[in-house]
Length: 221
Length: 326
Image (cartoon, rainbow over all chains, first blue to last red):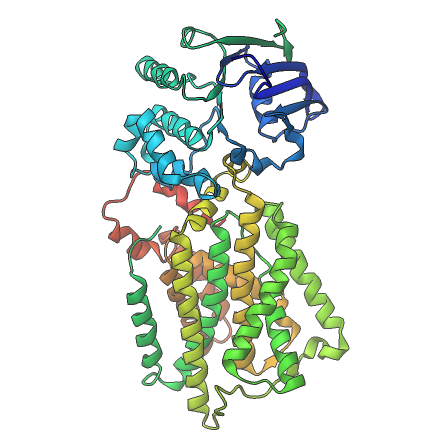
């Protein structure tokens, strides 16, 4: 599926956080439908890259293009509507809302998606979520919250999922379940970009691996 | 949030409270009118507080609405109470529309201080403008209703009471519907995480601006009531102590229940007028003790008195809701 235009194209990206360089000329191409892993140590720039794609950090140099269109041109909150679902490392659920409301939150502001169909799709992929759909997010365990955050990313991410350290800080059983969920997404025309510090959980899942080291590519793609 | 009352039940409640005014003594009527008007503006603060921002400068819209109504009343002789409330609400809303998007980018203490600063700038401008009577302000005529004028003071008081209670009641019902709506829930998400909701496609800026405009509309209408009740307006409307009082009511009420805002507003007015009557020299002390008692024993506001019992056993972690107002 490498033919044609890549879904996500990042060229020579330089991002500074308070004038400390966090990315120093990172480039990557993610083909449509690929499962891509971004591997690097703590502080290598994985989260910085995700946050730059989502528009919360402005690059000093370089470009990020999604489906051929430069992302710098669109405001931060427009990215979700393009079909990019983001699962932050610290989950970021809204504690007072129920699980279902948390999943629906991005759909409320996106007019072009069929809410019911998206919700059914999420419950179809992650069956557990349907069981505690009416529970408040603050009553869930950390691992359950992680699943909800994934469900929320799935609801809005019709084309691309950015998962920041999805396997971090969850018990082995749940992490196996998570791998299973991610594996089930293959062939659903979804592109997956996940960051992780090691490859133990997902070696079988991954098509392409990028290694990031001190903010730059270790092995150029 | 509070999934308690049906809107129809609330309409019935508003009607009952309005009719109550026929049997209430006159002094209670004017007290209740002020309490309802204050509840309206404090409700706006609660609406805004759900996005995690507290405005310490609602006096700006309170005065803006009041001055607009007063000027129009004097220039064109428009004295209809309902029309005045609508004009006040529109003026407040327009001001909010100008200011909201400008300060929606700020959050927390910066947001609060900016609203405070803007209201004090407005206060300064009003004091300096001789055309508007400077620090003395000016008087307006008695309000009328649908062409009827009320010579009997008791009837005039009841008319104002009825309009205030109905308006505030409608605003309360609207706020309840708003809180339960998708937009209302999204506002809560902004409070939790101002920036990162944008990952989900929500524009925090837009949500805060809209809530800000709603608060400004309520404040403008409230200013119109204060004007009609006093038949006088002066720059004190925009002063920071005026704004502070509304925040007090919002803190007293907590953000769990719309009805709590009205109860808190009425309680504050009652405590104030009774302590003023019996302890003319130390009434502020009594007011302070009252506030202290509420904050100590009902940290989540007066609303927690009945919201907690309705939900049955307290859920763990609900304490996070305490952060609503600093």
